[in-house]
Length: 395
Image: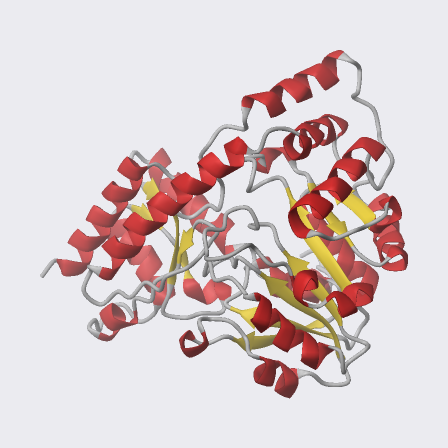
């Protein structure tokens, strides 16, 4: 039997991918499955972005680019940060990668050492803790409770920080909860972090443009500009522009740290796709009405699914201000059943009994919950809710 490295041996396969594979297997067997598991917009990439990619191919822009990205895309990202976030960066502070996921991975490999700890607020995106482990560090899970809107507080952060803490990950809007940190909440966290100069901040803003809360969107550095020299802002085009398969993520941060991340990328994937980078320039520089249209549709779906889930006995779905996930607790239903012990078994039961594919909340550090993606048509969502309600209320 092949000996696997201890880094790989301690991580779990992605829960979303595993659930998706199980659903696909059932579909292959002829079962009618409604899938609410993958976090991927159901819209086509806007036409002007696709045309930019076709033009790039025709113009022969199909070769390697600079490892850290083309000058054109770097400039588009700099202008995006200035326009949307009132943040100013230089080209050497920007790194373009094969998706925001690689941006995060580059950061962790470049920054972390054995014995370092990374504060991962829960509920968290499933990949955060395992990325930390692959970088030979330890995730310190800090649970955000329903009482505090599934977000961490300054006091909780203060009590968790220690001499080994090297990084904290902040994700807003959140996958899976859709919760958004306010400027005041970020400022309170920053007041704690300013006293710990060894700790860096990773601000994952990938769902920035899928936000419908009151007031303007606030990224961490808007509230805490005094922490610019320790903050990395991560974003990408996948969610806002329905470009998941194009694989373009980017980050901005301190120049020396970005250079170190460039070394990591240079010895792994090298540059991102040249054609995808040309498409991303069109996405960031082009008309943004497509983003607003998709956001409005996501909000409409949210309003439906939030109300519909709360009408099901034993289910409570909190409100949210962004992303495209509902994250209801099914604990009331679980407490009424002796044959379904937890959310993992519940997800499997709903797949078999109702033909609806969801992701267990345990994968996000929140037992008793399920994550349902509403990146799907209203007809699809209505069918899913109908099936869930029928299964749960059946005698």
